[in-house]
Amino acid sequence: MTSPRSSHHRLSTRTLVVVGVLVSLFLAGVVSYYASSHPDGLMFVAGEKGFLASEKGHATSGSPFAGYATHGIGDAGLSGGIAGVVGVAVVGALAFGLFTVLRRRGHDQHGD
Image 1 (cartoon, rainbow, N blue to C red):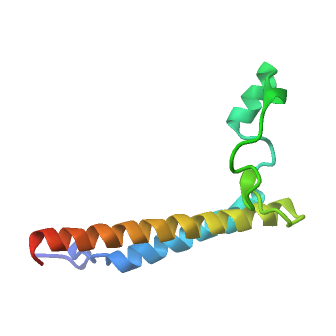
Image 2 (cartoon, rainbow, N blue to C red):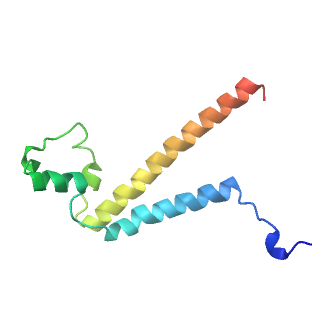
Image 3 (spheres, one colour):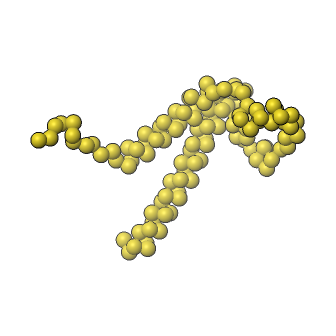
């Protein structure tokens, strides 16, 4: 005898991906607005150990989203949120492209 609770509802891949993207966008765009303004762990330790002043620019330091911020946006919270949303979008697009290529390649190898 089975109870109504024993039936399992299977979550579709599409639903899982959509929920994952929405949660990621919420965390990157909204929750990051309230994130600490203190430096990250590496910069904190560099300051504590006295070598933060020796920090040098890097290849991407002039990019529009360098330093977890969006250049040209005065509000630090909004700037970080926009940078986070763009980051989620870029990583999502790259992942989607990679999965699409790998899926097609897998079908071609198996004769599907």
